[in-house]
Length: 165
Image 1 (cartoon, one colour):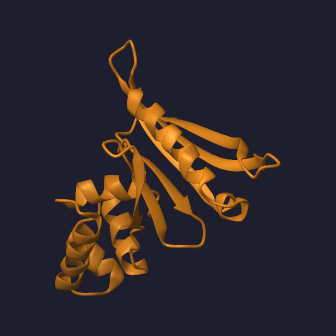
Image 2 (cartoon, one colour; image 1 turned 90 degrees about the vertical axis):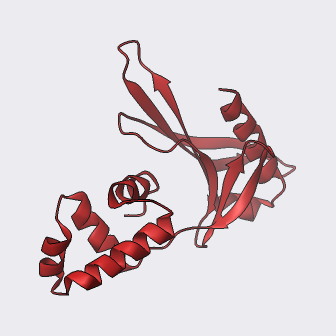
């Protein structure tokens, strides 16, 4: 809970350091896990968009959307800027947001990841895409590298939890 409060305080400071036009283009995302009394782990996914500003240009109200999920999402806080490749990830040690570039998968990589998430094997994906098995393996290696994951299951989970497809 302390990390969530630190992230929200840092988010307010981050938004305040920008003009209203820039703030309107930003969206804050956060997630955290809760343990239900029955032992199940629930993930709360939140999204906040600045909505109203005071006369000094400070964010006064946001619109928030929360989703409850039983899937094992990554727990993190980040800010994305619409229409750009900018993403700022919260660093709890520095109590600030660090800029990184969003991950962009090619259309082919997205198709392969979607088919893999549906249970298709590499050989079946190659047949449906009408390419060689080696081409699918090449694309899968690119996906693992871009997402910094160890296997296709991790890549699917990462892509799903970060809305990459």
